[in-house]
Image (cartoon, rainbow, N blue to C red; front, side):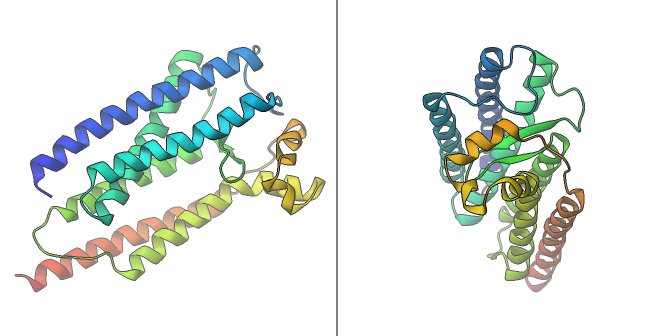
Length: 239
């Protein structure tokens, strides 16, 4: 991928992701004005069925848009993955920037938030997804930088394993508290059913497992380090 092409993509995808973040934050601001006039807090208000379904579908639509951005910007699987996680990360970071600017929320980095609804409910302190988003930015830019080199290359399995493992650990850290609550008060299967919405009415976050998040971050950064070693080996072979 030529340098000028990568730079142009970086500018426009960053611009689009920041704009999408404002749209996302605007929707949340409207919902909080309607259902949390005194400010967002747990336990959550049970949204009417039509609104809840719309929110669920909106999140899926947002994911589809981010995937489309990655697909259109990238010329191969590596680039498409990198642009997807880059746009996702920028979108997520600026979502919180807008909420802070407009609502002065969150009050601290450790304020709990509902992060996602797909495929189950994700929760965690705001600091956690922001840290993960910066990690995604670093990983994506490293992949895109290496992909500008003239030598042919593939991402080797140790890198893929470490990134996938780290992603799974981070995912577990986000669903662990709510999943534990659901299992204690209902059943495992209810997490994936309409019952999870009503359970949210009594759910108040208790603890976030920072150790699992740290393990996931270490795994992903280990994958990035492996990428650098792979790049060094590749360039030495072509010297």
